[in-house]
Image (cartoon, rainbow, N blue to C red; front, top):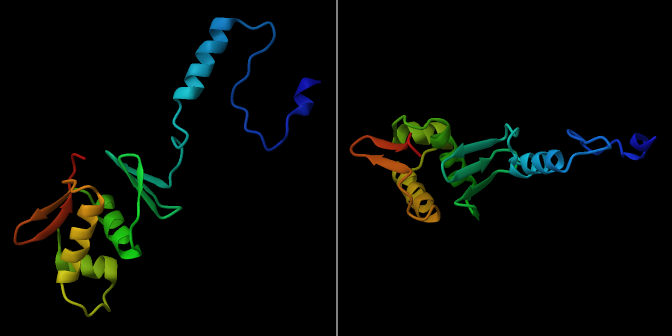
Amino acid sequence: DSLDVLDSTVDVDDFVMDPWNTNEVIARARRIMHRRPDADNKDLIRCGDLVIDVAKCEVAFRGRLVELTFKEYELLRFLVNNKGRVFSREALLNSVWGYDYYGGERTVDVHIRRLRSKLDESECIETVRNIGYRFREDT
């Protein structure tokens, strides 16, 4: 039996029985090739050109991996998870750094500036004058 040779670790979600039709094989191959490998991955947060892999703590922007410090990563993830909402510096400090953080509010500004530079000066993180920051909803 030809199915006995399949390793139990192989994921098989499609097959063609003999005799097979060439057009059928081509159509199935195209469908598989166009399938995104991470389509079912719930650990990915996608926002336009930005992809955050929560399981790996990695960020990719426009197809390239972005090196972030842990706090930059946490800040970006928090903003993306709450896109469109405006957060004051104090609210960001409390949410990302924790209530026991006693540094100045300008820490947020420095981290935002670094994030923007690492994201190629993208305008996805907006400054809301006299209030704070938000991740744009339309990205």
